[in-house]
Image 1 (cartoon, rainbow over the protein chains, first blue to last red):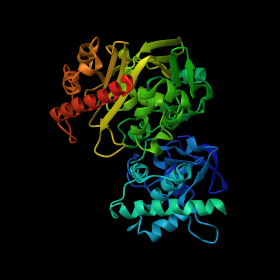
Image 2 (image 1 turned 120 degrees about the vertical axis):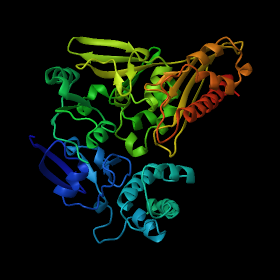
Image 3 (image 1 turned 45 degrees about the vertical axis):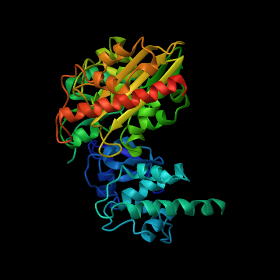
Length: 162
Length: 291
């Protein structure tokens, strides 16, 4: 099938590429851009492991075609930490609260939570649990993840004041 | 799995889209948010030669109040509907069912038109469209026609749209007066497809009698369904005199294609369905009476 040209900005860097229409954004990120932090679990929109930010909105990268992302701004897990490697508040909270074990689902959780806390800076516990319902984890039992979201949320006001 | 190969088209207008749909024939499919279509492509439940992405057509997105109708453009995202002030004010049922549509990541991409055109009997928007007697605007090279939701859904993932027709907008009637609304569904996990669910709208007259009742049923057939017998029973009766539980059971009458699968038997779904109707009814009536 004919490849189509796309241009998008990934973690701040502009990228031009030729892609087959059937290639999902997730495969494009992993295989073409070699940004393998975006993981693929189910590949049909259930597990949430491939979550990235598309123009700021958390989406399943396996349910977006790369051609649909033409002209968009994409943030992946590789784009969250500071240039010196300092973890983002959400990443740090996951580490502090044992919000991960094997780590396979973690990039998806972290991206989802990053968008969720931006839109809901003071979430209640039920809101957090509902927001996490779109990501599956088979190791942690979720309690550490819920704690991590609380910690990251509590860390936010301090950051906003600075 | 990965989707098989297809050609991709991104028209900039409705005319261009329906022109493509007509010219490319049966092997073409409209792609909106892709939250149902792309999984079906990935699982190879569906294979198309051409996808026509309508995501770049500005006129298809947005919510407008037009007289006593709320017109929702086909590519308006579920996330936009969830927070739209006109939707909240004019069509509470549409607003209230939205948090049940998938997860927030799905709602960021998924569209109202896509969900309705996909016609999954376990989905929220088709049932709400059916309950409220929404009208669907269909465009094709021979012009635009409107069809009632009652005449739109004709089977599992199947509608009465012709191959060269495209859903452009859905208009939901705005209920005014002493109205109340309820939406309930039961799923194993929040955001999963419901085992069963119910959307209820009710309007009372000044004497507290039910003037209008609409009951949409989710996951209880090969299409979204209406609890017709229960609606008829309720109309004319005082709200406080209606036994919600009995009404729920009555709403299950006449359902002939209740699915049985790994998630539950038809019998189980009917029991859940009756309970969902009873709960949604109770919410709607108490809202309408102002309790």
